[in-house]
Length: 328
Image (cartoon, rainbow, N blue to C red; front, side):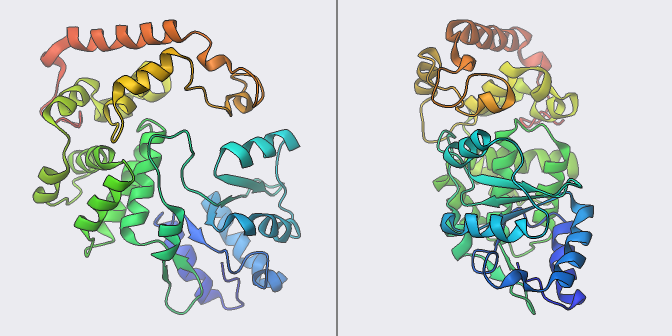
């Protein structure tokens, strides 16, 4: 990120961040090299970022340590133990650095984890990024920015209305959105059903202008739409079922799968092979490299999943709204 001495250029980037259209920034050529040379300038910009909570930066893996070192000169440290940091570097896609006052910068080298059923190509995001006029700040293409938000939605089980607002604002801010390119990129990323649901929910709940032709072209099969309607994603978001009903989240993610058979995923769950190696960081299991407790009772987990799905069938079509997004 270009920490220059003119506030008007910095404000361009901050305005973009404030509208939440920059989930990821490319600073691989700046951080850790010549960017953090103006201490006064950097302090002004970091003071402004306090209002935003955190900042996500995308750079090459080789630049991560340089970035950590550079930010360390301004009070940022990697929180937690060395084991936690090592676990994140091995099994996650970013390192988090934090100042004592709580400001967080996340240094990304990837956008998705190896264990996730979808994949965003970080190199493609960087190659397709554009320079903000008058600065060295690079921002992702509108299609990539939207797809990143969609990945965050499914990763967390569509648990936040703010993410849906992000979808709406991203579409509104890009009247020249290349829908065909977005569709093809989502298909390659195995996120097409998730993109369809996010856009449908945003349309139904926030009146997002999504072309009808696009909606018809990308919507999932009738069987998938029926099962999603049973889950009522829109109403469930407002009722926080992603937080209170773990089985609901798993079923939602199963029905949004693309490029992999659901039976294969269920078989891995039965064999206890779906454990997250980072569960131990959240107190859910043993350290990475040891047996994880999250998959210790696969039969019990699958039993709960089956019971929840059967409960949805029992409720039947009487509980299904007019829209498969579950928002109407």
